[in-house]
Amino acid sequence: MKNILQSIYFYLDTRFKLSDLIQFAKKKKVPEHKYSFWYYFGGICLFLFILQVLTGILLLLYYTPSVDSAHESIQFIMSQVKFGWLMRSVHSWSANILIAAIFIHMFSSFFLKAYRSPRELTWITGFFLLLIFLAFGFSGYLLPWNELSFFATRVGTDIAGTLPLIGKHIKTFILGGPDVTGATISRFFWLHIGILPLLTVIILGIHVLLVQILGMSKPIGIPQNKVKEVPFFPNFILKDSLGWMLILALIGVLCVFFPWEIGQKADPFAATPIGIKPEWYFTFMFTTLKIIPAHIFSIEGEMIAIFGFMIGGLLWMLVPFLDRNAAKERKSSVFSFLGWIILLYIVVMTALTYLLPGL
Amino acid sequence: MNRRKFIDFFLGGSLAGTVIAFLYPTIRYILPTKQIEVVIKKITAAKVAELAPNTYKIFKFGTSPGILINTSDGELRAFSAICTHLTCTVIYESDTGTILCPCHNGRFDLSGNVISGPPPAPLESHNVEISGEDIVVSKKD
Image 1: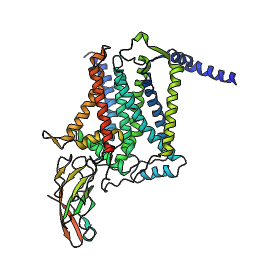
Image 2: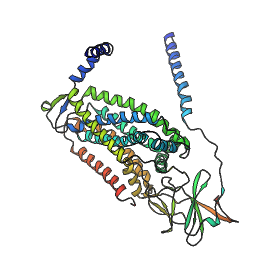
Image 3: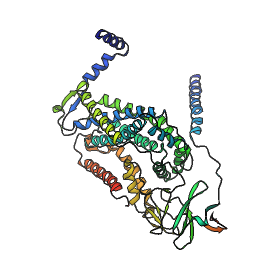
């Protein structure tokens, strides 16, 4: 048996140069210090993305993207197909946990100043990945064609429609017409399983490649020569896979005890249900739009809020170029403080959505 | 123009032409096709008997929803049910006698004017008339 395995390995090694790859992984070192825990969230994001792809491919077998059959096909998956409830629940739960993991990965990279030179592009590609996964969440939310997702899509696309000059065109392009219809499901499905995965593979590929080339960033303030390093293979990868197993167990428990809901089928001519809100990761923007006054200095409040988020996002993406202290390996307390303010804002606004729904 | 420049120009132009020949149909294919929309100006929104005082009905007015309210005084009012904030469908709250957008808690009075919340403009109001047993709603010119 051992000889057969060795022969197979030899055959593959001759063709794919596997020993070079193993040698590279063994040579690759990962810094180990008191903040090393946060490194594992990158791997968790990657693992959850793979889970998304696998369960998404399985869901494609039964899902039909049309107004007449989208909701029915989800009902069929959840109630008739063997383990259909599990596949859909794993897909939905892992999507939500993935967004949470991306936020944790992003904020931990921010506070550890991992964006500083030469890792600016790693940060920027990571920022684009966040946008792509938010788009994944937004487009996937409509696919079951239930009333919550219908109105969330209406509000979300209308936000894009408020942009001056190009807003209306963007909205029409996203929706496939002036309103949320069957054309919207087709477009969202196209985005969800075609365009966004393609973009993800390209940008994630660059992101992971940069991490491999540049290695992991060491925090400012820890003397570079005193940082202990452990081999990527097998030490780091084993700890990483332990994290994956824990996440998988968590998803399993959530799916069994809280299978993902189907909701009521969307009716475009029904009133909006009371207490409607988008997915949790959009609620900080949702609550901001709720509490902002209709007009501020004769400018529409929603316009100010939307532009505020856009400019905030742009500045967030450009942080590696704005934080001059971190670029010079000096502590940058101002940026850390701003980061905490942003994090606090997101947490408070998200909490308010659930604690004070009548706000 | 010498021969080398001509070939560079010719090959570069061919490449650009090929790219455009691929891009143009692709972009036109992706952009939504304009549908001919029938503009409906008048519609029977409900039967007189079906709407008790202090109740409402969402009705289909062309491609968008409208709201027909029979106020507590028995007066009929009709508006576009699309909130002027971010296009959610509004409802009538019988206990407060106001129109509410459940998405961001925008509130309108029974003339469609904004009372509170983020909506930047009033609701579009429609004409209401009774024709026999029907309540007919029409767009204002």
